[in-house]
Amino acid sequence: MIKIIPNTLSIFRIIFSGLLIVSFPYKTIFILIYLLSGLTDVLDGFIARKYNIETKLGAKLDSIADIAFYTVLLIIFFVWFRNILIEYKWLIIITITIRISTIIIGIVKYKNIVFIHTVANKITGLMIYCIPIYIFLLNSNILISNILILVTTITSIISALEEFLIMLIFKKVELNKKGIFCK
Image (cartoon, rainbow, N blue to C red; front, side, top):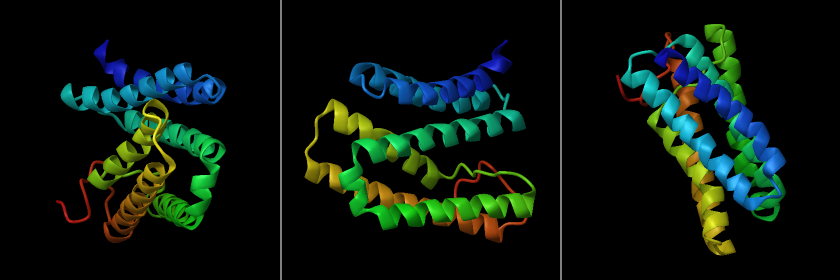
């Protein structure tokens, strides 16, 4: 029974991602679904590793759930924080370009869509995840929001470049590689 929990949590994150768009106008419901999305992201991998039930399907579902969640989040950011994000559009475009290039490399080199769970990617994911919580729950001011988005965007570029280089350098894909300089 426990074997299906991580994949089920990833599937729920995909569903929650769609619900985020629908709950968009309702701040409390949005934050609740948003927090549940984050919880499922943390728990699916934790449970899979803790009980040694990691699977290729689980890793793919997790990656699909991440893509769904961050795509919806990007759309929401552009709607809610358009003025702030326009200031950083070139940094965001660079990040997206690197990420798409990395996906293409994975498809060509490994015949698969590959997302490596580096420490930098996890930190970036956490930073991106915290932005709406910080802005909505704490009613932050524009200056602090700007700084938060700038630091997050720069961190995202660094993590994207690291994953890109890992994909180029290493012959065998290792999904849980901690970083480019880690064994």
